[in-house]
Length: 138
Image 1: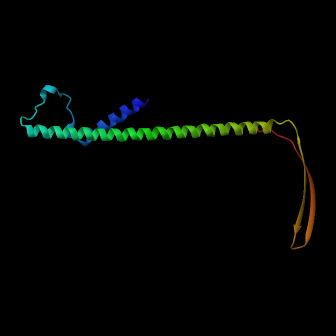
Image 2: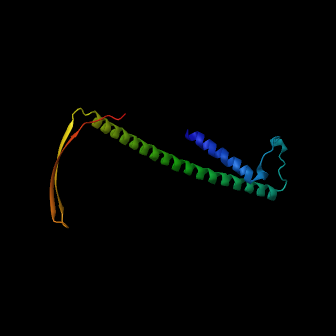
Image 3: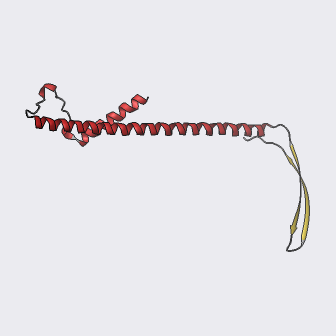
């Protein structure tokens, strides 16, 4: 998978470079025998330096692409780990909800309290009973 990413990135870089530097694009009917190297050393040296500059540019682009791939892979790993944690949390919540819904016992509560209203100097005491029956969701 990693090699496929690298090949795609290199292909994309090459395609962009042909668009950016149309003078280096190779024609369909190109053959090595058709090359006409310059006769003079200075011209040949200039062409060689141009070619070396292009190669160094490709190397730099490749290294940047490789660094981006590494960053993206680490980001994907972090996101996958986060998704696993969230899935674990969802499963735990599912288990808790199932446990609460499947408890067979009825729940009986006694509620008591005191309320005081200082404006009227009122005091109230209340007691309540609550009976709760678990009802499954439909």
